Length: 249
Image (tube, rainbow, N blue to C red; front, side, top):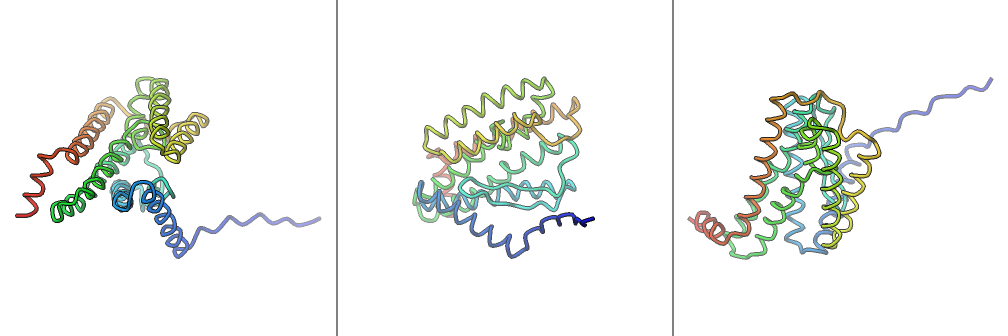
C-alpha cells in the first residue's frame, strides 16, 4: 500500500511579508488616486483609509474580537479584519459605524494645513475624506453601511435588506462608472453579486432584538448626519473662514 500524507496547511505570511505587501498596496492606492485626482487627494486617501480602518480595529479590540488587523486593498481602500467575527449583530453594527465616524478625525490635519497656508488644495483632501466616509455608509456590500443598516432592514424582512442592497448597490455602481471610477464600481458590484450568490449577507450572529434594532437605526442615522455635516463643513466658506481664524489665534 502506498502511504499518502495530508497536505500541510499553507503557512501564514511572515511579519516582513505583511509589511512589504502593505507598503506595495499603499503605494498602488496612492499612485492610482494621485494619477487621477492629484497628490493632495492621494495623501488624504492614505491618511483617511488608515484612520478609518483603525476606528474599526479599536471597536473590535474593545469588544473582545481582536486583535484586529488592517489590510490595504490596492486601488480601492482598506479592510479591517477581526480575529473572530462579532457574536451579535448589534456589536457588528457598532464595529461597522466606528470606521466612518472615527475616520473623520483624519480631517484635522487638512483643515490645519488649510488654515496655515490658505491653499484650497488642502480642502480637496478634507472633502475627499468626508465624502468617502459618507459614501461608506451606503447599505451595499462591501461598504460599511451594509453591516450597519443591513441587520435592521433584515429584521423588518430579509427581502427589504436584499431590495436595498440591489437598489443602492446598483446606484453606487452607476455613479462610480459615470464618474470614471471603474475599479470602485467593479469592487462594489462584485461585493453585491457575491453577497447575493452566497445567500448570507453577513456572518452568522445573534439577531437584533427590539431595543437593539431601535438603537442600530438611531446610531446609523446619527453617523449619516455627522458625515453629511462634515461634507458640508468642507464646502461652507463661512465655516472654513471660522476654522482659519480659530487655528491662527
